[in-house]
Structures are given as C-alpha cells and as structure tokens.
Length: 209
Ligand code: CO
Image 1 (cartoon, rainbow, N blue to C red):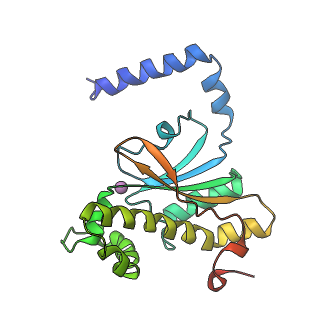
Image 2: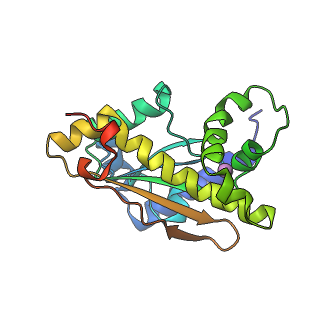
C-alpha cells in the first residue's frame, strides 16, 4: 500500500492541470532549466518561494534553511550559489526573510534548543551588533521583526563577500543581490532596498582585488 496517498493524488491533479494549459511544459523543462533567479529563503512552510512570486517550476533556483542564512563555511549553501552563478548564470540572487521568523525569535532568547543553537549563533551575533537599537523597541514583535530585517541585510552582505559573487563581477557578469522580506500576515513582499550590483558597493575590508 502506498503511504501518503493524498500527496500522490494531489500530484496527479497538479501535473494534469499544467499539461492541460501547456502540453509541452514538462517535456521542455526536462531538456534544460534556465532560471534567472536564485532564492535564498527560510525553511518555514508558510514561505514557499515559487508560490509567493507566482512562478512555475523552472523559473527559480531555490535554497532554503532556517532563518535564511548564508554562512561562509556552509558548503551546502555555497555550492548552490556557485552552481547558480557559474553554471546557470542566474542574474539575481534574492535573500528573502520573513517577519515573525521562529529562528530569529529563538536566537534572541536564551533557551537551550540543542543542535540548532549552533546554527542560530550566526543570528545571535547580528543581534549583539544591533542590540541597543533592537532592545530600545517597546514590544517583542517589533524587536523580532527588526532583527528579521537586519538579518536579511547581513545575509545580502555575506553573499556579496563570497569569492563566487566577486569573481562573477570581476568577469563582467551581470549579477544583482537583493534583500526582501515577506509578511506571513498578508502575503506581501517588501524590498528592503539593499540591492548590490557591483564590488564598489561592498565594504573595502571584504573586497577582493
Ligand atoms: Co523563518
């Protein structure tokens, strides 16, 4: 007996619906993918990349982890970025955080959550850097949401600091890194206006000659 039959039923209907509107859709996709966007988002089930921007399979290359982090020693995320930039030649990297992120909230607390505390240490470091401004806010929701935004901004910088992105820029490849945030409460995306398009816009300390 097949388990999770409802998911297989859903899949059958979904594939049939797409085929109905474009009979060659899957045949075309099976030959190649040429997405223009790399999405780095949170694993949160309420923030699905393709659905939010209403895009079909084949249009976005996606990497998701808890709290949408780009950590310099994370081979998984770096491999995704390298493949997306060097092989797929995507034109935009989007870091998309979301308000009310449980990972961010956990990083602001001091509870022992086990293994994940090591991952969230990266967020705690950002909290520490901005603690005066964050703690000055009156309510917890505002404090979490501010750190959600600051975290996105930091991850945009982390992406720009990678050798992968800096090499692409040096080679004249058109590549823009964006920082966005999503509201689970109304389904609306906000651009944080921290878009970076060339090495002149990143800190001197991280710039590679
Ligand atoms: Co989250």
